Length: 199
Image (cartoon, rainbow, N blue to C red):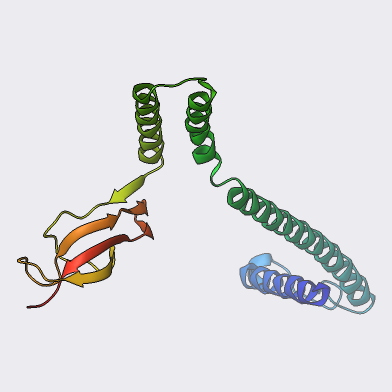
């Protein structure tokens, strides 16, 4: 890496020197004639200039290496933070859903605490709890898959458990044995149905 940086810096220095030489006015424009003493690289000056340039190149190389190491460390830190955030997201993905279900559990426990409940109070408690659960489902985008009688069988949403003779067209839903459920656009459980057989 250091060699790469050093060669890069030396190339830049050579390009700068070439540009400076192109921009220099001619001998006539300067009003004097170049001789060996005025050349930038002549005799002992060659060694001095090269060692100065080498020192500058090494300094720039060290700076670039330091910048590279800092950038590499920053990328590594970002990658580690991203992994931690993804792990937390997986771990606590259902936190909101779980929190919403607590009220449903509380209602069920209160129903059981009644010492001598009547049939009416039990029914009322169950209906209240079902309403709470439905609200939790709606809030978390958990929707029922409930095909109507006569709907065409959709293998992506329905699972045919059996076929029966019916007046309905073939492969249409005769009866729903169990609702299906979708989470947003993903099927969690297909609806279990009985379909009409071909005549």
